[in-house]
Length: 135
Image (cartoon, rainbow, N blue to C red; front, side):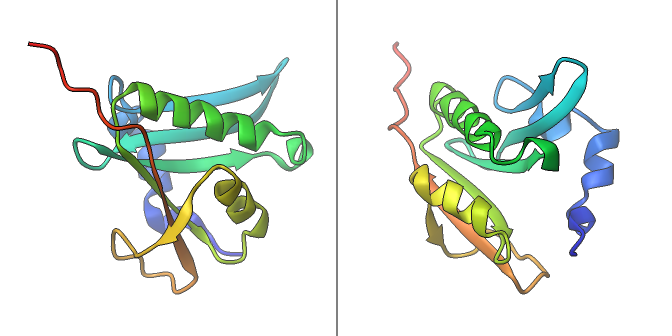
């Protein structure tokens, strides 16, 4: 397998909430009674662009719809936070993740940052237009 630690996972854990801090970011954790089941994060990249990160579902909970639920909750948060676009990256070998993203309206796009791993696929989804603040 391929480790995503090159993307600074350990550092992110040590500095939580860090880039995921509210009000423009968020971290969702899923629990089943006393067992951790999955997670997903969202962080701002620009004023109107955010990035979904760290979507993970433990193997015992895969195929239950939990990944879709977490992704849908993050999309709702992104819309409510006035983002106009959400981006993400995944590995080309992660077929079910790519299927999930496509089913949620994401489309492949050009890289939005340099990633040293050759098998990364980038996705984006347009969100609702940002609401203008009332004066």
